[in-house]
Length: 106
Length: 409
Image 1 (cartoon, each protein chain N blue to C red):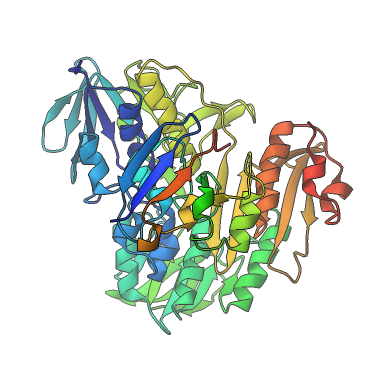
Image 2 (image 1 turned 90 degrees about the horizontal axis):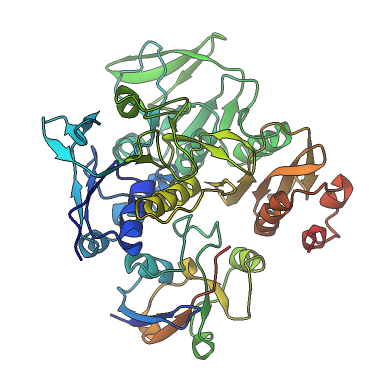
């Protein structure tokens, strides 16, 4: 199972082995990672699962759709590496992925 | 130190699935048990009329949390159990098998149930309501390519169900008793838009059409309307709204008025009994009125407030309601509540395209936004509502002007 590390805005870091195919959002919910709200349950509707993909991994995750990009344009503190964690599924290629969480989802 | 305090949660849907783990995160060390009359772990309800019904997601994919998390959080779940009474004097919850469970804190997340209609033939095989997973699974047995489906009710549930079933090749007819679909929740322009899209997708919507009987011999054959029209059907799905489950609370003497009355900390008039989600009526400081909401957002946010309250961390509930509805390739996101609007401003091409936003204004101030395939209008609309300053309708409608420029500060 690929390992994913979630790092909070305050620097706290948690590492989990996630099943192949689950989203980074579900992985966070299943492990009670603070900072991912995920109101819509992963249907790319709410932008409350915003995260930053570590710079060294941005070219390895699937590209965002137009819908996701539109939502990302409106999150608080968007950055070039902003993504919605519900839209990225865990694959073997993402073993070791590092995800940073924003200060707030709102 | 482990506490001996006991928290019981009645119900196992969005609010419950949020509440249990949130209690642990807030430091609750006592026991947590969840009582549900269903036989499933908490699951996402919205996909039942969308991806689950269309067959693109299965049960495992719509569970709110993995089974692991309830074990990790040491949350006991009793399935197939119905709470029948609350003995407030002895602080016990009574179950249908006679068991009496002691509680220190009790949280009612009992949700809502479908509103039933009383016309001849509703008990025939092939007539369904849609609220829970069993309903959706049963509907799937009666639907498929070229099956004739009649949906009674042109609200969001009816229309989402129509879209999901149409995707599978069913022939779908929606009967709406009111003069138009979405009468209760949207402006006429938006309703007209949805009417056009459904027509383009091959779903027949008939307004002003009141169903008065369902005919058939054991199994449904047709729906008869007051107009004299009759619609042949292999299955009928009724979606005419929900009623909050407040009986348990009312029988225990808790205050109920179109929902279990709770304060801004999710407390009922009994300090040890809280409530969250669709079953509650609460005061919303943004709209300055009492609300009963049917939404995931409210279930999650109010459950979080309840968990905080139980852990003596009082944080008042104040959130802007929001909703969503997926039909075909349309992603509708609704920010705020439009009731009481005085005019509607449309931004974008509502007549021929599949993307626009409808802004609901009251005396110049923004009350709500319906954003179809326009996530920016939704996200910025939320901010504009909270900003609570008068907006210029011409600027709102002007697509060459970025919405962001209307934000002050």
